[in-house]
Amino acid sequence: MEEYILTCCSTADREKEFFEQRNIPYVCFHLNFKGKEYLDDLGETITSADFYKAMHEGEMPLTSQVNVDDFIHFFDPFLKEGKDILHVSLSSGISGTYNSANIAKEQLLEQYPNRKIVIVDSLGASSGYGLLMEYLADLKAEGKSLAELYDWVQNNKLKIHHWFFSTDLTSYKRGGRISSAAAIVGGILSICPLMNMDNEGRLILRKKIRTKRKAIEEIVQTMLTHVENGENYTGKCAICHSDCLEDAKKVADLVVEKLPQLKGKISINNIGTVIGAHTGPGTVALFFMGDERSA
Image 1 (spheres, one colour):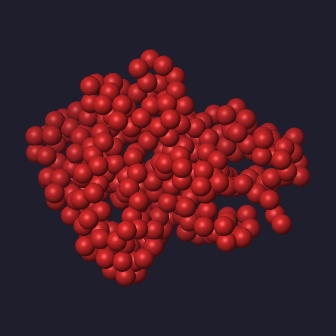
Image 2 (cartoon, helix red, strand yellow):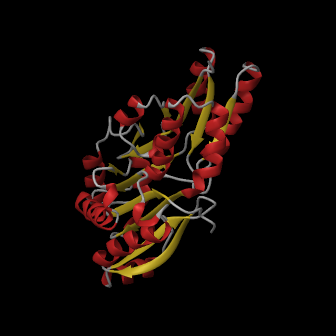
Image 3 (tube, helix red, strand yellow):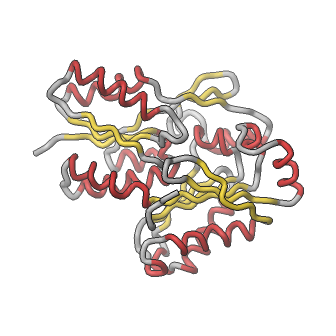
């Protein structure tokens, strides 16, 4: 029987227990928080509550990607055990981690010429990336081969939709995604930008919506427009949030109202420290399987 391991980055934003239960090892991004270096270890060192509390108080964490040496040390033990690797990386549209993984692959294959290391660009992030990993873990559990998983992910990764809105524009202003003037006007008018990831895995502003209530309605309506099988959707659905659980629950409730077959099937997760360092508090994201992202 073919032996291979399915791996990803910590930025897939699912709970540590999920990765342990599905046997998905993950490589950790890096975080500079309050002047100290940490690993993005899914809440073990820094809890979401402490992280976002500090951001509310003005802390500005910095992140750095998984580098080539990190990947070499991460992959090497599996190769020594005689296992091939299918690694799914954070979107190349927002990070250089995919390139680092490929450089590490080429170096390691010189040492392990009989092994296979397959690197996939998820073109996704956060719990949308995590949702993709869940689909792949299901296929692996069914006994599918590495090649079959690779074919599936290449054919389906652009069908994972990533939609999100934010009620706090501070971090978007700091990251240069919106201007200072736009952030000020947005705050005064209670504007919530509705964004998604395009077919190149980049963050794109799609609409400017006044009030959080309307943003919640719009994000669910957008799901109805794109979701696989419309109101009869029975696939996977995930929501994540950055210190705004009640808003995430409101989105989940409205999703269930519009797509009743999803009752009890929606996972709600925290946006992790790395993605959260860029979104800041107040972001809610909705992920599901739908039509193919074409722009």
